[in-house]
Amino acid sequence: MTRQTLRLVRVLAWTAVVVAGAALLWATVLRPAPTDHQVAMQQLGKGDYTLVTADGQPFTQADLQGQPTAVFFGFTHCPDVCPTTLGEVTAWQDELARDGQTLRTLFITVDPERDTREVLGEYVSWVPGVTGITGERAEIDKAVAAFRAFAQRVPLEGGDYTVNHSTQVLLFDDGGDFFGLVSYQEDHDRAMGTIRRLLAS
Image (tube, rainbow, N blue to C red; front, top):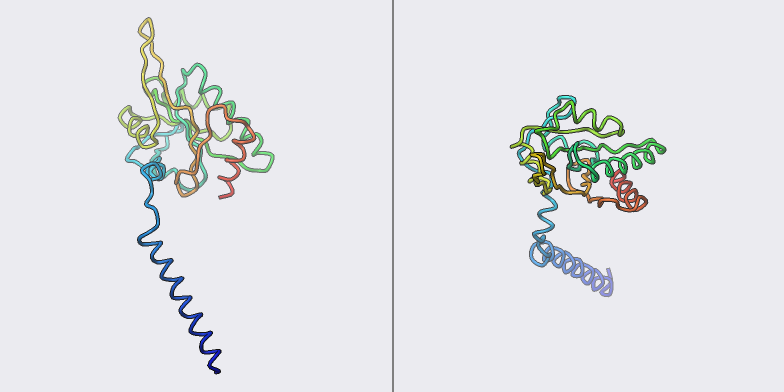
């Protein structure tokens, strides 16, 4: 091996060492720590709650895994947001069906006192791929907290009440990790782009 070749080998070896050292330094010291917001997003849906589907099956954090999933919170007496969102979900499912796809969608009630399994099952029966989920009040509250959703009971005249609640549809990958969201009344094509990326992930 010539002196010039040896010099080249040494240069390449030292370059490799420097690159490896820089990578290690980045990984262990310099890489920015996740922000509080990023950590919160990573924890969405994770919690100690036990709910029940409209057909009587238990639902826990573990059941988010297995396939891409959309989750939104609402209630059957909702006058506007929930019917609108279910209509949007129907449009998504119809478009996906043309490609032989579907998106598992979970409708979790924020009004378990009125939304029994039977009531929920009837309410979502017309939308393909949607499962209604209810549970004891304490478990619903745990789920609302785990998904960082919002739900507030508001009294109405005559002793009735409504519930103000979150409007976004949360998306989770097949590992049960938060993927993204679709905003209320988001443009259809934009929403479908996000959903197709989820299904392809």
